[in-house]
Image 1 (cartoon, helix red, strand yellow):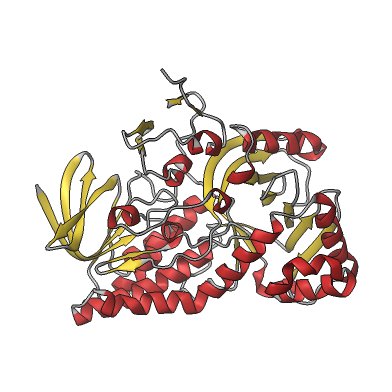
Image 2: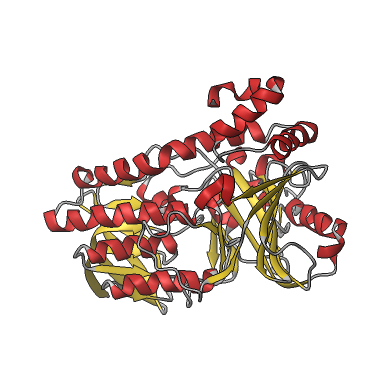
Length: 396
Length: 57
């Protein structure tokens, strides 16, 4: 069997994997990144909305090739149609872009390659190599040929379906409350406001929301996430989405260019995403904002943290937890609090009735919010509807 | 478990959600391993209802 020897093997060439590979390679590590698909970035399983504030931090150069559309902000819609406008005034740099993931993912992989990463497509990991009780790489199939990739550290960047973490024995299992099941069309020929991302809350999407993310003047990603614990019948997500579209004349006349299915975790931060000679990043590590279901920014930031630590570990020739503990510390310092807080907020939000959501969104639109933080939002509700905040007291 | 290949989008949502890690996506075909205990989570989870449980024999 063919054997390859590397410092680091990254399984999965999504944004988190490419970021990890890039920062590790830049730091001097010999990195191989494998991708099971024949094309990086495809097929897309994403609503493609991102904020802007983190992009520079992780070293991504903005390129019009992958920016599909710049939006002015977001419209949060309540069940009966109250709208709260989020724009640069109250959200600052949270406002963002709708990207083209096919090109975005390729751009990030190209950055990793430029830093010295070797990439193999059509190559899927099949199991971990264990040696003397320690992880020593992965077995894989490349174009149908079984190979052994020996590495000092394995990076599981294999997304929502992650196998790497499970093989290693890291508990990544999810409760039904912590999963959103999703469906999306790219609709063209629609009438809508192409300058805002729109989010509709309430019973139109039980435990989740319906999104409209602009791709261009008459084309948008129109999709839905439904909390698994609130699914009553198989195919509910598609049914709810079709119903939502049928009720909006501007969308109803649209035609689908593609349909996308998927699932996303909306859980609290995992207790551990690393062990001797192995780390998880991105969706594979369940690093998703439980309120928005977004994971690109978090995955890229965590990927950068992982890559930097892996490079250090390669230099010190120690990729045990002695070194990797710093990765846990780094990503938790940067991301863990927000994931916790937003998970708790999600636990509350998903219990609210349409009437309560109407009141809350109406309060925001009426009185305005200076800054878009959970604390500021709650303070506004407290001032005008103190009875609604009782349930949220612990978050203030 | 029965998978409708006409409905399946090959998205892997069921793979990542299976509590027993009993579902595999081999290219475009979903495979259930013996680990499957027929908990039914994938039936509800599939966004397009491509998975059904066969009646108990």
